[in-house]
Length: 323
Image 1 (spheres, rainbow, N blue to C red):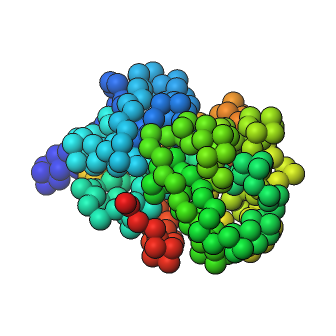
Image 2: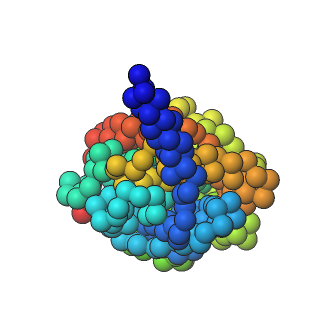
């Protein structure tokens, strides 16, 4: 009879110890890997999150830019070379969901090797054209592309990026033939060539596009998301302007290595959802043309799997491939 109280006492102590481990996280520097170049939308988003997590945690949160291979170098580093202790996280998103189908030699599995923690934000883009191209609307663009098959070209900052696949989806839905001009290392060179007229079209994020649209150096044709953007309220969506059902938005969220404890996932998710509700964070995201996307880990996992399936269909039907 005397054994039972001892068993219950041990069980009670064990129950108290488990939450204490979660409450102790983090107790040192946390690293968030941003797999794209410094200054881009992914990098800016990661820095917004890192600052707010530092304020909540009281421990340094650093941004580690590990760029290359359309975001896959950074993702592989976290998936394969990082301990599942919560101190190395990854800001990944739509490019990685696309990459599952587009790249044949990935050395990590987005579903098996990484665990979704929290979605952070979604980013629609805007299709822009050089002013010399005689198009002002989606219907104009489709008509010109049909009249000049294979003669129009569009740029993208990375092969397999949402901006690349956005235009591939446009081609498929509009039944037109346009030539893809891929760039490496971000949108800087592409934007320069676009303004010089060496590239005719592109789907671009709002931060690099808006200054050029406002200055008249580029013409905004349509927004790729489901709704118009408050940053360019006069510009219609692709769906309302001629291709019903067209809806492409990039997205990003936090992932960790497979094996990350449920307590750590819950902790990081809860603090990320809380910071997305802050007025100053919403304001900064709005300046990027982005919207906060708070989700539970389970909801985010379902979203990621749905995105993988969605982009597999686009890659298959468009014939997009890595050259």
